[in-house]
Length: 401
Image 1 (cartoon, rainbow, N blue to C red):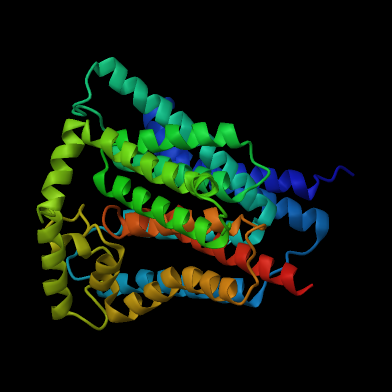
Image 2: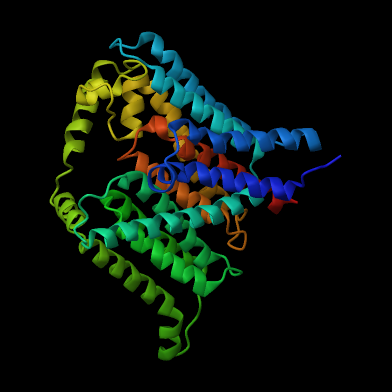
């Protein structure tokens, strides 16, 4: 009987999960697929899980990954139940479908993912983000202008490019077997795409995380210098890195639309978000324990059924109250704390670098959903939290063997 090897299943899983992140860009910029097409990558993940069970009989779980997955399911079960005390009498169909999709994707991931699949995910994310960057540059060429007006779909495109840029930069710094010149070129291209993406907050987040990655690299790669010339040689990568960051910022400032929004941000203006966040906090104080119920955040923050507070914590505070918030805070911060704790204990080594781009990409999406996107669209972010715990835990077990 034909048995698909596990390494092939891992390649498929990595591709499918990366495709799930890229699907909004694929639908808007490449192929006009119907909305239900976004389910396809999740079904591929579930299919490979079924094949693995059929061929090999078992799926191994760790206590940490199962515990983390349990709290993820607990949060979304509670949010679904909160629909019973929904305050505004609006349709909850879309929110329920989105939550069930998050549950479906997270379940598929925990049944299929491992270290090898995570490696393939990073490679495919870089591939899709390169395609998105090339398409973005072509839009600027067609417009024959750097003003940036008339280019839509920039939030989802910036998320994909940002994740790809940070993943590529992580591989460039920490993976000794990577093709240095190729990844140097791709990193420059992707950060150029992020600078042109029009998403000022995603751009700033990407730059800040890139600086943190650079500082971590030099913290873990200390080289002694015995002369002034050798000092400059040893510090050349650091100097080039900060020059590179400066050039990326300079490029972003050439885009009139981005430059204007950055000036507003540096001037202390958060635009419409300021009213959204103030209304959300005031509204939360009127129903702090169990919230207003699923789907209420738009009405409370903006008096609109189709809107949301542009902050995952405020959105969940309004819908589910302090109970849902505490669970959400736990599941969002745990992968970062778990990685930091195991790194300090020596379980995570730089040579097993894959945890670095995974955690960095997770951090980028966390910050994105903290200021831009609808939390009920956070299927990749939530599933990437599960992937992070799986990857970190498998590296911990490798260390103990």
